[in-house]
Each structure stands twice: as structure tokens, then as C-alpha cells.
Length: 294
Image (cartoon, rainbow, N blue to C red):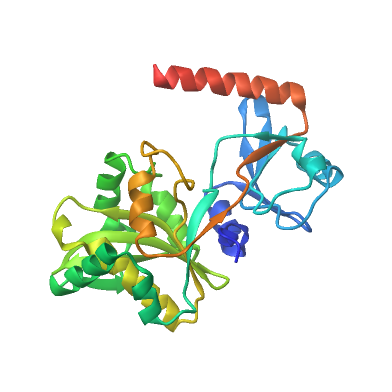
């Protein structure tokens, strides 16, 4: 399976267009989202792509066709050396390191593969009466949890309208864990091409002792198996061997507790079509970041 394949889907294209972005699908290369830069310039982002082997000439043709300064690429496999030499490593957008659980295994084997503490917390949540709902709650229902989670610094939050459009396009669905009628944990999930992806998660400040996120994921795994889905993508972990100070260290421990196999991709790169404009863009971005930090 290819982690993040949903980012090249028709549903993702429809969602991006609903936010006002230009989306161009280039045959033999992939889906590109065109983004604005200063001075009327543009760049085009190919999330989790190119989807096939490409050449330098193909990428240059795409850049010229789209009229962009550069192409931002997220290859899922190592590209050939002739292209690699033309790429500039940039900040990561989609995670290049993830964990994937094989859902073709029996439930008993999946439980056995979990860390002992993870199995205990799943059973604890069941004993505490946590219940799980899949696809029945709205973004309004879970928004307070997402705001609380974002305030703890676990992820950057888009405006609520962004997620409303994402739901309306059919890209994602919401799953929640409840104590009584109170939602205490919520996930945004994606089902695409035989893979269920854990896109975002949120939890509140109350009832943390009932371990609701553990049961929420276990029920999502069992539901995916019933639907014939073969893989559960945890969508982002710290690189293997990362230092304890890595910002994803805590969430990585949580995900690893469920078992699975690491899946890595090369990262995020820029293919530069117009070097002078690209250099100016990099300078402006550095100045803006320094101003933000100060």
C-alpha cells in the first residue's frame, strides 16, 4: 500500500477546489494543487506524488504548463539519481515516516501484537463504559475537543470551515468516544483504496483516566476489518531512533503500542523551474519566519 494515496484521489481534488484552490491533474504524473506566492508567482504541490516514474524533462514540462516557479513533490519511492540531483529538500508537509497495521490478520493476532499496556487500556475503557460512534457526529460536536488539543500544541488547527468542506467532499469521516453523552475523544479518519488512515485526533481535559482514545482506535480497527479494509495507517510517527526530544515522541509511543510496520518515504522536495524567483521566495520565507519567531 502507498501511505497517503487518498491525497491523489478525486475526493481530495474536489475538497481542494471547494477551498478555492486550483487543482490540475497531469496524466502520468499526478494531482497538483496550485498555490499563490508573492508578486503573482505560483508553485504547484503534488501531495504523495508523483504517482509514477518521471523524468526531469517531464517535470520541467509540467512546471512550464502550470506557469509555476517550482513544483513541490512528495515521492513515495526513491527517485532516480538524475532527478534527485535537481531536487531541493524542504520542510515536510505530509509525514514521511508512518506506521501501518496489517488488518488481514485475525483480531486475536492484532490484540496479541499490541503492547501489554495498550491491551490493558483498551479493556479498561470497555470496563469504564466508554462507547464509540463512527460516522454519526458532526464537526460542531467535536470542535471544542479539537480546539483544546490544538491549544496543547499537538497540531495546527485550520478554520472550522476547512474541516466542514473536507467532510462535505466525502474525504473524511468522524469517529468519537463518549462517556455517557459526553464526547471525550474524536478522530478524523479517511477510507481510501483499502486503507483506513488516522488523519487527526483530539481529546478533552476531562475523563482522561478512562483511556478513551485506545478503545476508539480498537473499534475503528475492528470496523475496518468488517468492511474488508486491509491496512490501518497511523499517519505519522517520529523516525526510528529519533531522540527523546522529538516533538512526536509521545504520540509515536501511543501508536507503536498497537503494533504495525514502519513505512518510510523520501520526504518533501522542490523541483525548481525558475531559479531566480525561487531564491527570492526562499529569502522572503526566511525573513517571515524570523519575524514570526521574534
